[in-house]
Image 1 (tube, rainbow, N blue to C red):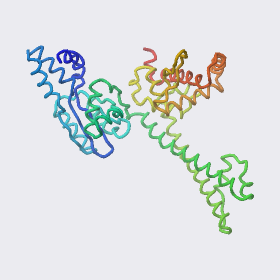
Image 2 (cartoon, one colour):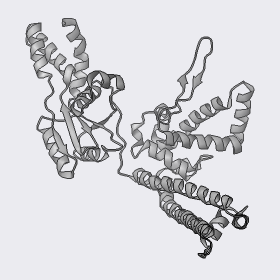
Image 3 (cartoon, one colour):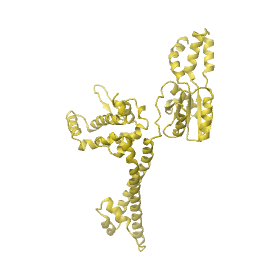
Length: 387
């Protein structure tokens, strides 16, 4: 026991500097809290009592165990008044050095902003892994204690993305744009399908038309209630065409607002070959309004899911693509690579050389995505590129 406590002493010092309260923000409308430095703080107290005060090891361990209990568990409403109450409750326990919040980019976004405005440092806490949850059960207080241990042990170190600048504006506009584009594709597919399955006269009228002409002519239809099937078909075609035209207008209006934001935030991204406004917006959203939280281009590559992972076996030494990370940012890098493979002369030469070496197309794409992530990071964090 003596050696165990001595071994925990150094780690307890780090835990004490991160002494704070870990918050679990749930979508049920309740915030649950668990505070205290749990085991490491108790170990630090035991070592200090033994070495400085001369306590016997048994008495020091008993005293430290009592001091290492969870200080309190409390619930507050997820309202503005509730957030102020919880901040007051936190500070009633002393100076708060660190707060861990689960879901800082979703349900915990508002709570994270309130804590940061109050001058309290926040760290991102992942949900407990399945093995721990299966072994220790599932409840909000249990999750809070597990999250506290993760934050105090240094396992949870992620700095939350800030949402108070141009990138946050780009993100919310991109949400509306993405849903409008998806609905447009669905409506256009339904429109073409109805034209293909209609009678010969209707089918021949709309056959071999571009999307713009198909939408314009179908939206101008004036069906007459003669034959029920024909009238219903033409009415459905007109409705879908007008929906496509309306969504086109939505996309144009959103683009007018998004493009100046992207140009102002990261003009260097747009100068890269194969990067347009949509791709640049996805990469900016992945980095957030505080790209300095990404310590290196390797961290950004891992965030985008393009950091190489070992996939070796026996005498075969190779790497494979990381299937984790931000999939929207990963898709943006993929689009850049595909564009460059088709229209960028240096990339085409590189692809030909790699294929001659026996690399598959998938492996070449993986390598190029990693390269594009390195290049994009220089424009997301210009200061880091010159360090």
